[in-house]
Length: 135
Image 1 (tube, rainbow, N blue to C red):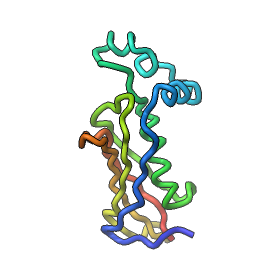
Image 2: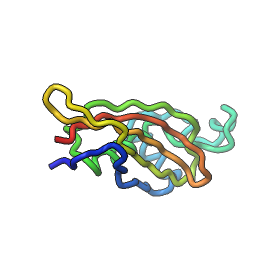
Image 3: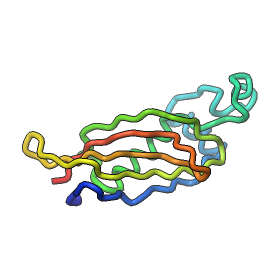
Image 4: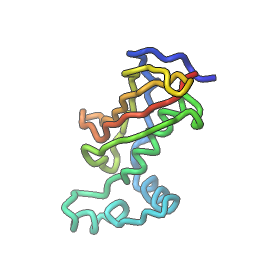
């Protein structure tokens, strides 16, 4: 059963584990994204970064967990996002969502959710929007 949704409702925030080098290596293997800037400090430095940093799709995976913590996966109708900053190794991302609109579409109630991923220092790394069926 999906929750009733009202404009202004806030999803339970998601605080994944800090981004470790092991997490990056495991995600590279699991996703097939072996771009060295995510796992090799020399490659990251050659690209102008101070250290390796998280894959954008790892951040998106966290956003998916945020949403599926609130509604079942089959209720997600749309998800879009833009990356606004990198997520450095050791960062502690916090994923949040807030309902900004609720409407009836094709016979189902749908909520539009503004999504943000932010780091402890206040850096926003992702801004997005999802649409989910709530009933």
